[in-house]
Length: 103
Image (cartoon, rainbow, N blue to C red; front, side):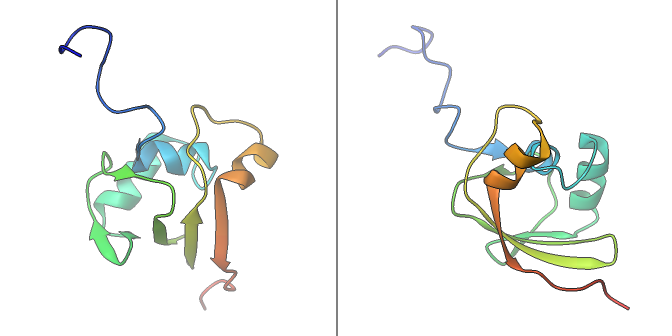
């Protein structure tokens, strides 16, 4: 299919910006907070440090997220199109390590 003939890139479910996913999954309240966490080096995707809020996350990626005196290990199960209720957000990920707060 020719460019501009109804296609605007990859399917929307292929990947989602890291800052948006963190908001949609309710780890943070705003994209600005998510961007700050990411830019300060507190996010790893599949073991690699990510510093760009626009980094594309995909289903199956494993995130290591250090914030609010915790380190969370999360596997992405689904991508969302919006920030929904908490019950919906919990379906987006699997918590691989329910670690207690750091002291």
